Amino acid sequence: MSEFPNLEPAFTILVTINPPITVDSASRQTKLMVVPMVAGAVTSEAGFSPSVSGKFIGMGNDYIHADPDGKHLRLDAHSVIETDDGATIYLNYTGVLNVTSELAAIFAGESESTITPWGDAFIHLTFETGEEKYQSLENSVFVASGRFRYEKGSSTIVEYKVSRVKE
Image (tube, rainbow, N blue to C red; front, side):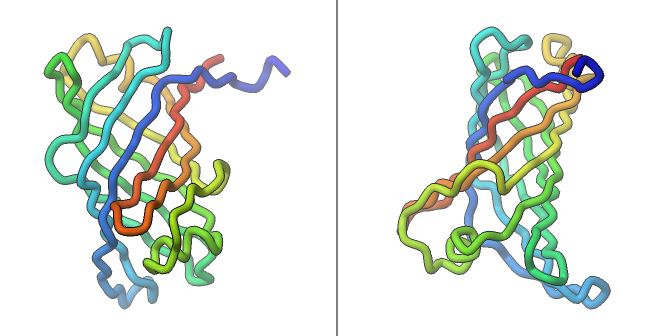
């Protein structure tokens, strides 16, 4: 199936999130959830170039809209990464999250400690940077699968396995 693209494992992203701030929306008739991204880390997979390792800086947010039927969430996240070598990279990702009973319980604060399975969250990532070493990130297509790691009494961590789309 040479017509289909391949995926090259690129990096793992861990995002620590706080509970959402909700904003009513008359035009959408569903609430906007603004989810603070309070910490995060990026770690390259062995052999991926350019190697990216760093942490989230400042306060990022994920602007989430629920579909009217409540079965899917539409993600639109923005943050800044500071690499271990001092470069700054703007990160934006959009995607779709299937709302499972496990995930609904996490968002409602009713879950016990759990790790959700892979396959219910998919995103597309884009990057911006002025650092020559990382410029190829801007010209590549990245996709990821995500899962939630929740421990009662602690902040939720979203884990993404990111791959670059290759020919």
